[in-house]
Image (cartoon, rainbow, N blue to C red; front, side):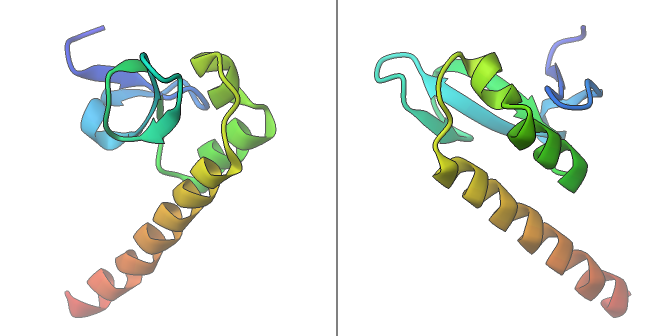
Length: 94
């Protein structure tokens, strides 16, 4: 795989890392968080299908080898909702 390219843990699509959400299990505290930090990372497409599959099948937990707090999934659903909410407004203003 080329540098700066990652694979979605849900649909297995390969793309530039900026196209995905990054979920990190921090190396020192083993705490799970979004976007920032050094440690084991998993990447997820910002789509409803990928998020549903990752949550239902515990793909994040298995990939990060750690339990995923429900607050992480809630934050991802909020991000997805705000992303989908933005697209119709952008389409109308064009």
